[in-house]
Image 1 (tube, rainbow, N blue to C red):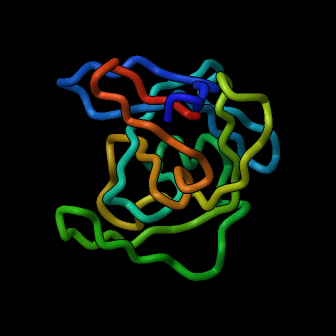
Image 2: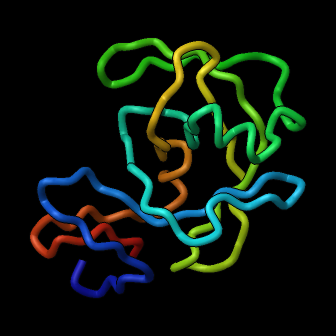
Length: 138
């Protein structure tokens, strides 16, 4: 790993869960938030990104929904049925490139956090560097 260079990184305090900074964009070009927002990395969630219903609606993602709901089993063994739509994630510290992703929102009980799941993070070589307090894309 000595030859690997950090392309982008975010500070990570040991008492906090790992996060990376992102923005979300709908297919019609609505962006949330306007600046990079630190977002939880959740390896127990196999989807792309999970949004609270309010943000999902703000992005007008109902216009881009897939016909069938998705069911996920979270790390705490809780089952979550979601509505899915097509959308994009931007990692501003990396580039302005739009990364296509399936965006989930809970069908029933809402979530308060935005979660980045395995489907999204598999697209990167991600290093959780606890010794140096960084989450890095390398």
